[in-house]
Length: 334
Image (cartoon, rainbow, N blue to C red):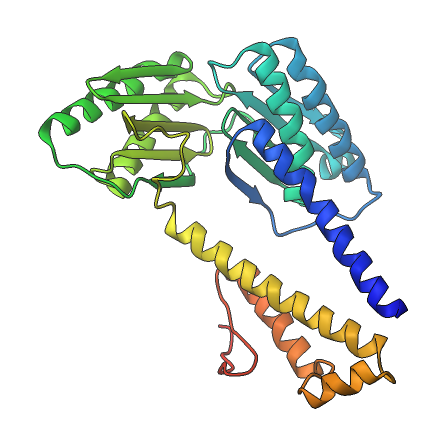
């Protein structure tokens, strides 16, 4: 049964490949969000070389004790070719981490970034403790108040005391965090805020103000809420609803929906590969004939084409999905 042994070997390799990610996640703190560009770079190119150099610099420089630093690899004034292959990046640690905690978090996040956003021209990874980002375009120091991620607790309260304490915490964060990492509290509510180290105080203040607007507008009277903009974040929580605990969060519905769609699409693709493998591996065997009696066959060109169309549509529109298979109507992507 050489085909069966090959299938078992493939399965074991997949499990072995996935295991380090879970360990790294536990070691670097809770995963919060990741952003990966749909455009991919080719391997063994000038950009990959510059990116590898940049990520190595991020990992090594974190040991200097600085909680923030930015980097450029391959750029140069007046060098058009270098500009097209340059890589830009940064890291930042949460302001209350020790030097050793910052170093460990950054290095492990850099290591995970390549697996989470393989071959992406731009990528970012935020975990509880630090943030790493790179891009093929120079984004460092440029004001950007785009919402990257948000989540709200499932529990809420209209209690006047809670709302008064929450608003006091948010006012304090908005007023004081422009000068650096800020942790504050009022009554039963605590909060934390921080801007990236590459933006000026006025831009930080504007970012924090927008984050507070997002928190109140999106999460209402939630007992805990987090919002991450591209250059700052603000969080608050009532005692007993610590932001480091994900059990009480309903999460960002859009992000959850996209994740479900990606998972379903990936499952369909794996199903096609699995059926193709079995069909090719046992064309003349009894196992193959038994599978054919059960209705399995090599996937049609039409099915392959439809799945590819679904993938392209979802990538273009961040959520278009057209299911295909027994019991599903065929829906055109538009």
